[in-house]
Image (cartoon, rainbow, N blue to C red; front, top):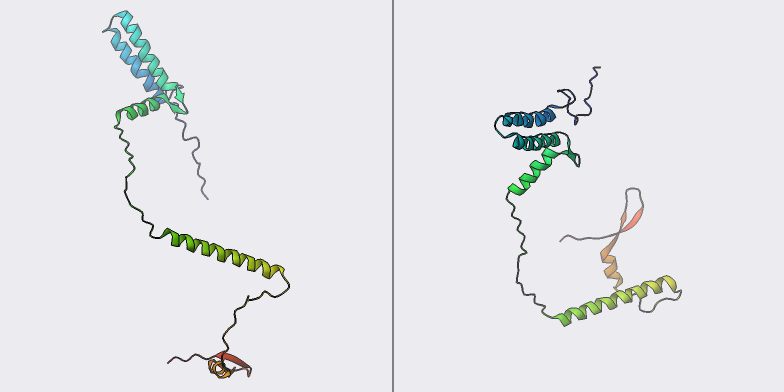
Length: 173
């Protein structure tokens, strides 16, 4: 089986120009070259001030990091923030809608009735679980059907095993 080396530390740039990366070298070399060319154009005192500003700016861009990001990235993002147009609109839509409550008294009466039913159910549940004596009017009486009506609804059948069972008859007419 072939072995492959997996690159590690890919966020660290290679040191190509001595102890400097290419970006760091460019950030120092370009302002130094510009200040060298300005030496022949400007007065000596003015050139000293401009050279100090250019070279110190290049060194800052090459080495200073703010929050783990290079200074030149922070400056670029800051300029982009100020340069890009910003228009944030948020206006809540004003919706005028009339809400009509047709019969609030009826709804309130329905809610009261439901609350009473729930409380009665809770009381019935408590009584069923705690009392030994039967609860009056708990079960509603079922209308008595005649024996012939019940026999018409059910039929005795015999299974293949010979066992007899009662099944409900359904007529699809």
